[in-house]
Image (cartoon, rainbow, N blue to C red; front, side):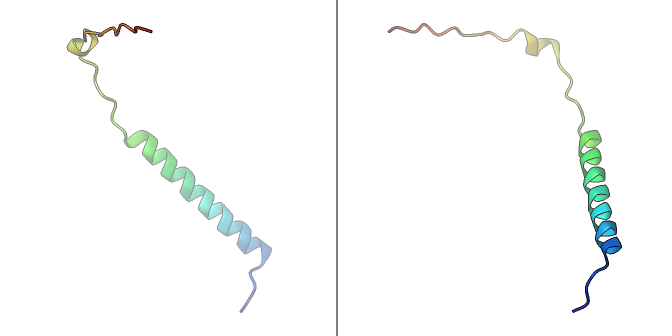
Length: 52
């Protein structure tokens, strides 16, 4: 089985790092932010009374 030269290992590592960075950037920019409506801000908050 032939061995890989150190420069080939470096090329392989760079390729994986570039692929990983592109994947992370795509996931960051593909997400569409949700719009906050006015009705969602006025939700009723129920307070629970704790009896010890």
